[in-house]
Length: 494
Ligand SMILES: [Fe+2]
Ligand SMILES: [Fe+2]
Image 1 (cartoon, rainbow, N blue to C red):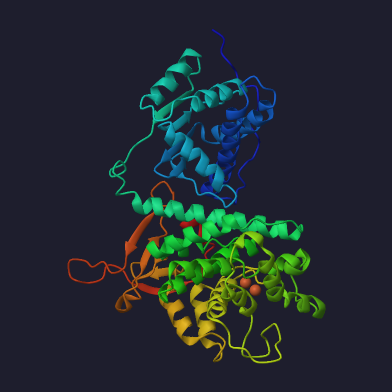
Image 2 (tube, rainbow, N blue to C red):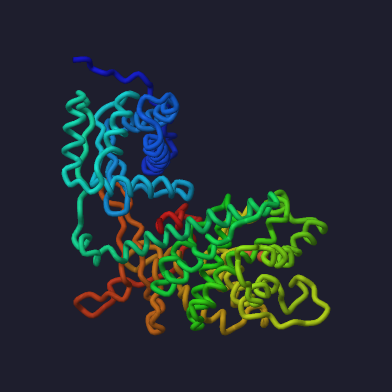
């Protein structure tokens, strides 16, 4: 019997002393999942003898072996809709979303819950593993045993699969319904960011942009916001510094939808509002990237160009073929979104014009998102609470007072994404506001805590909970600035 020895040395990606272990594992894990995803897909196209496979196998191999070398063994496990790397839940990056989804879906379909690597792997072994895995019949309850038997037949003993674990309620779908909605929320969010990016790129390249997908996504978002707005509101805390315009458009749309819902808009009007908000800054596609991302203040000429983005947006939207019938309120919404009652507003008009409702809603959503997102010229953003305070202080007429009140009501006095210090000395992130006006200061909070092994726990507590003596178990003492504590709030919502 020939023992296959690893031929490829693992990629050297040593952990820097300053890098915490879970951050390092998370980075390596994201890399591994992306590589695994590509390999699984490629295996569906080429047979295992194809030379094209070599490069992809090599890349995955380096990722796997680096991790095995680091920890001695490697366990990749699917639990519900999450992936665990050596027992630590992997949070995916914005770019990694598709790969995570693909891997989890494919394993679940084949009833495989875990693949455990006990030692370094060779190219041949990895190929065998991938082809065996992908050739398993969907839904086969004995797949893990079959897989292990096949590996044993090939003398590959350092790899072992375990069946997918099912959880209570998973079969009848009740317990996971909420969890599923959260998954749908993530999917809609990331797909919309990607679609906006595609549209802007097309417009920049003077090509036709297909907006049918955007319409479908806006409809899905409306549906989600009607069911439980906190799911999408939580996603707005993912502040992607590099892809500001895309994330910003999606966030503004989520806030606008939530306001529209509280105003009692119909589904049709909400969809129109959602699309308008998604496209509110589309005119920026005509502004050079250097101007948009300029670290310092804009010069006169640049500023004049910048101020044209609302008008240029109108022009673009009117030319979008697949948008179908464009209601005037959508176009007006885009035109209005920087109009103000003072000279700082634009475009300049000869005659004073009342702002339309869409424009007023988008303006509030726009200001809040811009203030709470780090930008190239302002790396430390306002906390949610500070941003609301600034907006409240704006002199009359800047924001419609009623709409602002609704907005504050729906993000809460401790808005979603706020970091809060509790009287139990625990620290938590507000994840769902309490909509009962009496208990606005008692939202649901995700505790920022680590277990004995140092891994992040995921415990949500409700601040209306009382102890045996009819006293509240926990209350907010004050909010903290996450930037000071180096906490990346968005990651907790993934
Ligand atoms: Fe704008
Ligand atoms: Fe904007």
